[in-house]
Length: 246
Length: 335
Image 1 (spheres, each protein chain N blue to C red):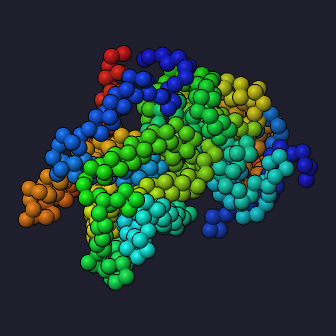
Image 2: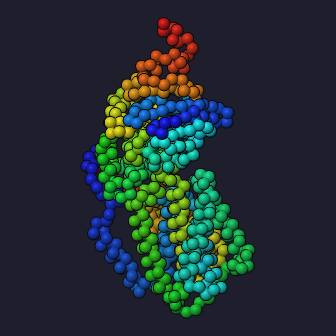
Image 3: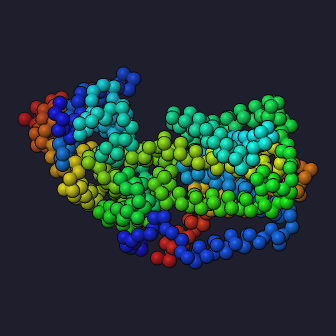
């Protein structure tokens, strides 16, 4: 394996009591890349995220990040190494204010309260939540909670950001705002690995797309190639669908 | 909607000099109080301070880090018995005994904490584990002759001596507990503004989200346990020295666990002043009802029960939580 790889997942498998959630999945992520991860419901997308971030432990295979094996590390250690995730079901610290929520993330790299506060305000402004900085997180609307999830993850200063359906449940305007944010984050040098259900969104957003189905990686390539891939169409629309199109 | 401009000082805001002045004046005034009130009221003040200390101990683990303990009498009892036994058998000064009490309490806390937190026990399960360990110690102390068994231990009074933490008068205890309480409140107030303080809150709110943001959840639960157990044990030592007598029920008993946790819960869990407020409200109530219904010894516990039910139903964040909500609502309406 090349030692210069950024994130390298090598034939990772995970099963839950005989159900193969992820079987033999390999993929590579390059620095500064936006990689999309798609697949039908239950394909194992979130499981793959859980494996990379240490919330689940792979049965076999290796996950290398900047030349170090991540398998067996705790989530907080992986976060310290530079991989931060968001959750599909947002998990705000409800009793804390928006600012305090972000501050918890900032403490990952900064120890001094003053610097933490400065950084937290900067991030809140970046995601457009500064007007609600002092509101309790429980009072935020759904799109704002998604923003908060993103803001907290950014506060940890990740090298790689794993976004689990940050756009689910948003209207097109809100989607666009998040897409702009994601592009800005990438321009700042952070690589992004994103799960998204919304085809139009992910096709426009990603540099490259990986498709998994029943825990198997069935396609890997640029959005155009993937959308025309026979296996992918089959996975989404069923066998014979591509024939009907011809 | 008000526009908050990015500006420092919203996190862990310091206190204005006016507030420091008020606090200073109150603390100074408290130093003159014992000479102006009758001794039985001095006793009540001592109990208020003492239960603020133990309540703050509970608050660090239960209020800030969100690990609800239903057996903090475990640490209280260990604290009381450790210093007392060392004093009776070896003549060791309770001041030094307090250090050992603290150590023993922390060791027990780390043991129980590791057992529970390592396997992700939390909520009611953790509460019951704590209760179980407190009851184990309760049973041991009832049946083991070497620690006085059910009769308890009488601490021999050797006259007023600062070195032995023994005083015929109540006033010295008033000052010891007052200063310790002020110290405990100050330390917790400082803790709120550190990484540790923020991480405790994150752990309380959501373990997974905290882990994903780089918080070592297990470690911070253990740290909270250490501080909590240590502080509560110290409270136990002072209590023993003050009453010069301890028995299994009043130290390791379930009722004592309730005494410890009910104050911060009513005042406001996870706040600096919650335990103090709870103690100011409840301690006099407990003492007076105990006096008023002497022949019905359990009446004040019934009152506790009713208050606890009411607070949990209507004030889940305690009185301070309610005050904050009202304040927040008023501010919104003004806008």
